[in-house]
Image: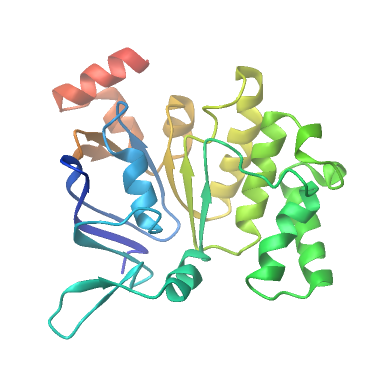
Length: 253
């Protein structure tokens, strides 16, 4: 069974249909990169996976469970209780374009906050785990620094450590380097490379083609709310079949 199962998902904002019947599976341990022009539906799909956005049709399962919904006796989807959704969402890490760190907390406190408050991990245990995670992203020496004392790349690495502190089975990345100065991009991508090498299941929205080429197991091209092409990066980059993919890659590369 795939870790992530997305079946015929539709999403609208008013009269605008952003997702028009997206279906795809992601296996455990797989790294999938979503490509596409602005407005293609990539970020919306990512946000639907952990129910930051509701869907209007179809279904999304993570580890065999619907996220955000339950089925009634007639088989229709209805939204489940917030507490149930929150418990499922806790196992899905997400890293955003903006770092969203708590400005009044140190790097260490940012990483320990959710395990203590949500998972009820004892503070001493959460602190030890947080220090290990900060070390894994190269920031153990910045544990007592506040976000304003860190570079953008360092803040994003703290955000990754914070997501990992919840011991997720799936990590979602929404253009995690787009808000960074060019010289800081590499340190975040290197952290993501190491995470992929550890076996973490990852779905990544990015325009970093070198990362997609080197790290992705599969690249999915989206356009106008649909998956139009997918395949291993070597195949998709060297011999794309869809005209929209060819045009997109010609612009990006």
